Image: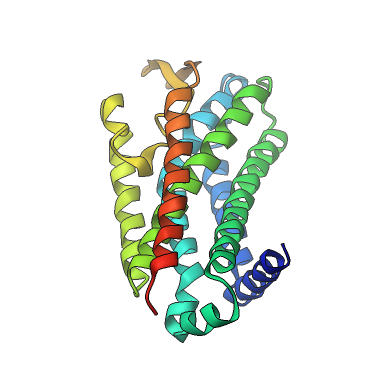
Length: 253
């Protein structure tokens, strides 16, 4: 445990110099401005505002979080590659403690971003005067799915950062993945299962039931929670975690 705490402290110092907190809070600000720009204006819109919000958030996450996970993962390992300090670090601490420090700290940053997004949803509901009853169960499910998909994407991008000495492959994969995920959101539902970057959307429990083009109103409905895909996502995240550890353990320096 002492080695683990030291590794986490070292990662915190590195993150402080990388200004990771600025990145996390910047994501929250962008999300707030994006969602706030589509705030409901009429009484009818405020009556189903949470439904509209919970429908929009997964699409926004597909665009933003897929890229953010790539940026976080590449920055987390980039300092060791640029400074050529990996060999020195392996003489000062075990590979296990170094990897667990990065994995746990990275997961903490992912959880922070998900928590900030959840706070944005609550703040918008209070400040915009939503009259729809707050769907606590849907809120918990949305945040659980967001955390699971983001963690899975984080470890997939960390794997690329470990494989290549250049952070560009991870970042480019995140950007291309975000575009593919956004494209799959407008394809038949089955297509989304083949694009992990877009899992935010098929895991969404809200769908458009009725679109009244003349009145410009949308009626939303819910569908059953997609526990099968959520379980698969968690399993994939655990698998990628194991692959990342295997790559770091066998990595030559």
